[in-house]
Image (cartoon, rainbow, N blue to C red):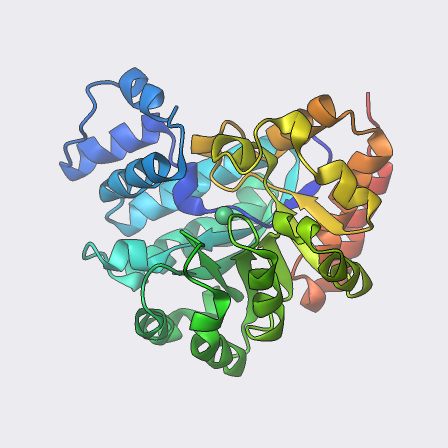
Length: 330
Ligand SMILES: [Zn+2]
């Protein structure tokens, strides 16, 4: 769907398509445990979180140079633009790269190179969000933020991702305080697999402005009331929820109930190469499975621009919102 939208929940490492993985593997002399792109494509049909994470981290081995990261981001931006994305706030996981010997500067400068020419090349404005891997230690997160200091001009926010259960937001209080002191915005994954309490912690202890996923707030009416009253944006990823079994099937997705409750929902793609679709594909899928009408879809798109970190450029936000209102559904 070409409805203009902002993508606010997108892991750049999760946009690695099999064809690019093979091309980078060849260029960097990395041997992948798959003979062909078809074989690798078949491996993308994993059926649980652990098999997804195993493949996801194994394939990162092909990303080594600034050029690799620039190509990865450029390929994503081209696909996103073709599906109506006008603004993208992109997550990256520096620890997944520094752990295998790739310097954080290589990652940030490579991504940054693609992002800074994105508006001209693809018509997509961008921001970069540095995410901490929550299954690693709080000290590792602090060290990562410290290592990112020379590159802060390229980074607008911090986030928290990877395996949620057993790694509550409170574990990262200190690094979020440090990020605040550096003037960074704050988001965090919470309430995808973890309980509603993790959403409260993300808000109260980390001070996040948006909650990534946040689905499980629906188990806690008081929390829903608070999220509605404070207009806290939730970055939902419907196709991801089905692939990782957060919901059994898309027709069971709580999105309609969440919209009806007045929650500030947005629709995003998470790790689109692995979860069966980019932002527009996610819009198409929820329209079809949940029978969303054009005004509900327009609300989701409007919400995405309202939730974007565009406070420094309200003129741009207003322009994007006008595009949403002007969009004609066919
Ligand atoms: Zn995510």
